[in-house]
Each structure stands twice: as C-alpha cells, then as structure tokens.
Image (cartoon, rainbow, N blue to C red; front, side, top):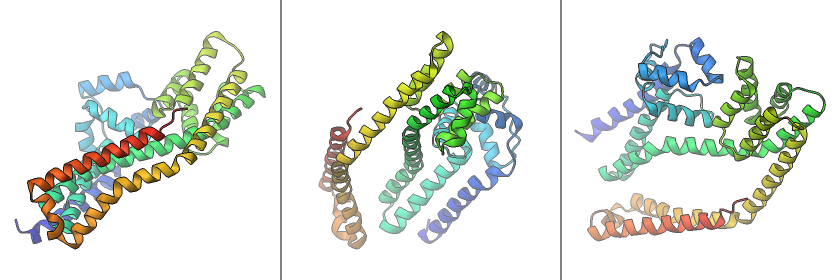
Length: 321
C-alpha cells in the first residue's frame, strides 16, 4: 500500500480509538452493582459470576460490549486491580483501547521520523509498553505519597482513640484531616463499613489496593487488638514512630544517592539519545548499524552492556531500611 494512503488511515484509526476509549465508554452511568463493588470488592462472588458469564452490563457502547467479553477473562481482574492501585478511573476496555491507540500512534510516529518499517515496528512495541509504564509510575508515586503520610495518619488515629473516639470515628477523622491519596483510601474504608462490611474486611480491601508494608503493620496491629484486646492507641503510637523514622532515613538515603542515580540515567540514556539524533540527521551514516550483521551485533552488545551497568548501579544504591 502507498504510504501516502497508509499514514492518514493509521492516524484516523488512532484518533478514533482514543475517542472511543474516552467518550463512548462513558456514555451510560454505572449500574447499582458496579457502584457498590467500587467500595466492597466481593471477589468470590465476582469470580463465580465471571465463570458463568452472568455479569450484567448496562452500557451499550463499544467499550461496554468489549467489557462484557473481557470481564469473563481472569486477566481482566489483574488489569482492574492495577488500574485501581494507580487510581485511574478507567474501565478495562478503555485501557485496552488506549493501549491499541498507543501502539498505532508510536508506530506511525516511528515511521514518520525514521522512515524505516523495522524502527516503526520497534516504536510500536514501545507503544505497547508505554501505558503499562505509565500505570506503574502512577502506582509508585501514589504508594510513596501514601507511605510519606502514613506515619502522621497513624499518630492522628492514636490521638483520636485516646480522646475517646471509636475506631471507625478515628478512621473518619483521618480521612477528613489528611490529604489524598491517604484520605481517599481511609474514606473508602469508612464507606465500605457503612455498606455493611466489617472493619477487618474494609482494611483488608485497602491493603489490597495499597501494597504497603507499613500499612500491613498497622492493619495487623488493629486485627490483633480486635482479637486479643489491649491498648491500641499505645501500639499505634509505637508503629507511628517506627514509620516516621523509616521515612526520615529513606529520605536521607535518597539525598545521598541522588548523584549516583543521575549518573546512571545519563550514562544509560545518552548513547540512545545520541544514536536517535544521528539517525534523524544522517540516516545513511548510522544506518549501517541496522543493515549489516556486524552492526546488529554491536547494537545488541551495547544494549546488554548499558542495561547491565544501569541495573548494577540501581542495585548498589538500593539500600533497604
């Protein structure tokens, strides 16, 4: 096919997929069952319904129809959990449509820049991983922000318990006084309890959404106190002090290792960036790397060495606290 026709077709298809993912996927409001499941995740019931194919979907859009197909697959549960941990308000079908649009967009961009089908294919592969890298980045940022707030939140929770509040009232106080993302998660716990779940189940749901070792320590302390009794406020104060000290030490480590991490980024990405610039400026000069077997060997060896150096530096500066 002539490239003058292929490029407009790919561009139009990518724009169409983006519009379908954002607009058509939100045409109908969520059902009552979906709104309840936002706060109370009933995994056993949902898995049984998915196996039998009995999940109802009121949305008649393309994204809704795609949801009915995807929801029966086990991979849909994993994608939904990853989106929830990143706090992205997307359906599984919308995420898949955006992933397809990303592949087409980056493949088209690679073809326009490099004028090479092989590099266009490589750009499409990057487009496949780009949404996943973004989701992982959002999860990491959200988890770090949550852990930075958790020490103060537990201290506030302990003070509320000392002043005579119940555990649920103390959790609600934390949700009102703190800022997102911690306030959002504690508010969900209060809402889930209001919908009929026990405090233990609601905290377990929060722990499933936020993979934090410090939060696991807090939830374990609350569950143990509920079973055997004891002074929960004093236990939480001790946990709060431990978490705050850990956050302080981690901050000092990040400061001391910032120069080494910057060196790793520069050493790793400078050859790649320089190679892309040279390829865009003088295609024939650097194109020999991709047209000769010796050039391919050099590229593969270079990628392996650069990746190994980056991983070694990351391993050196990754100090566990």
